[in-house]
Amino acid sequence: MIKNCRIVDEEKDLFGDLYIKDGKIDNYGRSLNYDTYTIDAQGLIVMPAFVDMHAHFRDPGYTYKEDLHSGSLAALKGGYTCVNLMGNTNPICSDMEVVKYVLNKAKELNLIDIHQTVSITKNFDGKSLEHLDYIDNNVKFISDDGKGVQSNLTMYLAMIKAKEKGLTIIAHEEDNEIVTIDTRLSENLMTFRDIYLAKLTGAWLHLAHVSTKEAIEGIRKAKREIQNLTCEVTPHHLALYNYDYKVNPPIREKEDVLEIINGIKDGTVDIIATDHAPHSTQDKEKGAPGISGLETAFPVCYTKLVKSEEISLNRLSQLMSSKPAQMLGVKKGKIQTGYDGDVVIVDLEKKVKINKDEFLSKGKNTPFDGMEFYGEVIATIRKGEIKYKKGSVKFDNR
Image 1 (cartoon, rainbow, N blue to C red):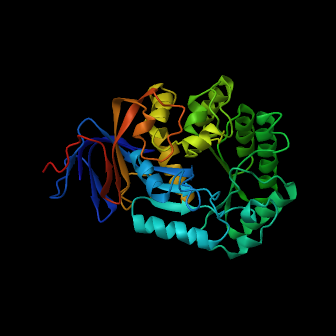
Image 2: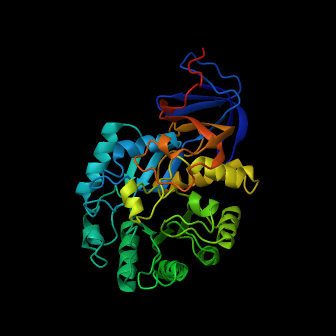
Image 3: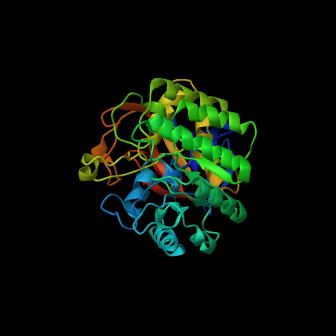
């Protein structure tokens, strides 16, 4: 039972209490009375826990950067109880053996819910698609994240297969021949190609980490014509510009940030996803692109979007919880009877100074180190169990 809180999801904003029973949301409203474990959340906000459509836990194969345990702890500290992992592990996730390894380990850890993405092409070879015939219903998404599918023919055939199998393609948009000359052109060309192919084939296309104003505008136009298109943006692409920190796609210009925010406001953007990409200090020094993003996502997004009055807290909840949950097909992301009892308790008044040394992720790579934002995650609850709590919140106040 969580008492005396402001309850916010994509639709509601009310004061009262929330009761979770047997791992599910059972009731919410004013002056509820149940003799059960109770949290006094006076002055705090209770929202559906966040769901991340795009993260890297580096397990198997690169566990010196992150593993399923450390990644899950980082997720919980950031308010996330469900993540979708990309397939650029070692071995690359091109078969059910790797999927089962990840899912079984996640179940054993019992920290967060994990979904595993399979590669579009076998071992990212850019052409083979036969492995897709052998994946089962545990898999909902396919992606060559980190590389992108360079061949027009391969992507066309992959979309036909994805449509047949009811899979969503998560597209990493990068033209390898162009990227060394112009990263913007590289992203835009592949974005427009894949939108056209999605129109043609009817396959569901989800565009990862969109970062340019031209791509946002292209998505906006396409969405007027087709329904099988969604996209995500990252906290770092909406919060930073003209900033020298290596990430792929790169931090863009101010006009790109403004267009991303416009896209969030007008509904062009569906989801905020972290693209959590932890690296060791040595790998980062050698130029590995990526940001360890799970633990900073909420304060960055709340400060840049809600506190600055660009969008409502309801809309942020939709972007970070209900829409990604809907795409993953899980009963999370809303404060609704029968939904999983996955909630996050946040203090919106608390100013947070980001300190990478306090990260629970093995990856301390962040451009936000030392910066201040509003909105601290106080506790993360999954299926009625407190999985993370910060310091001095009073628990069990019957």
